[in-house]
Length: 166
Length: 123
View 1 (cartoon, rainbow over the protein chains, first blue to last red):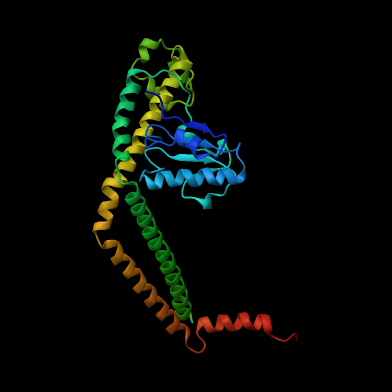
View 2 (cartoon, rainbow over the protein chains, first blue to last red):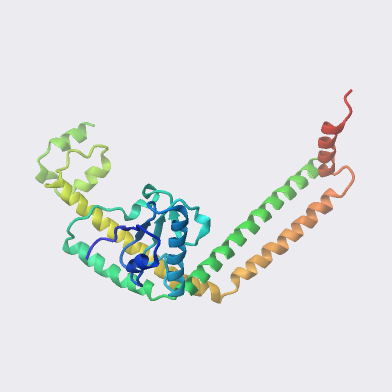
């Protein structure tokens, strides 16, 4: 057992055959994965991102949990639902830990995490994605309407105040 | 300060059991004994904290997926809240228009002032 540190994959080409070596259902079960695409051309990077996203979507596997998948690429985040960063330095620091042998106490926590990882893996990824998105949009709508309501209320209060004062 | 110095000078056996308390009260932490083989223990502590935080992260995601999301979609309070907000916004807009749609209303006066300040012919 090892710590859930970043598992970095340096791709040398955008060939499906090479990518297939890495793409497997348990890829992000135990640790976050980073595809470093910096050695590829701009178009090749786009191709790899598309193929990987397609793999996760068609197999109904989440690329967000248990552990996230990241791409180090020159592309903008808007081209995909997956997480893109421009350089390794922009990856979340949370998963950056020094490797060393684990003691019994740590192994016990890791064992407990293993159960949680499996439970998250067994979730219906597409359904979860839809529910999270709906949940988020719903709260955003409530927030926007509340903002508008408070704005109108403040205008009304001001007008009423001025009217009272003549 | 004198008390701190006094505690610092005390033999370690005399402050046994109060180390954390003294450390919390003091802005100096150097008088407590350092763990031997510091680096390895520090790394181990970091690993344990990291794993515990990761455990909490995973548990939160699980809670979101298995409890929070299904629960939120079963009840209609959210939709009711949205309807209430929309109705109140319409009501507020109507009130503002009603108050403003009067001769010499503060709103009209303000608009006239702004208009005049921009479009009045130079004197």
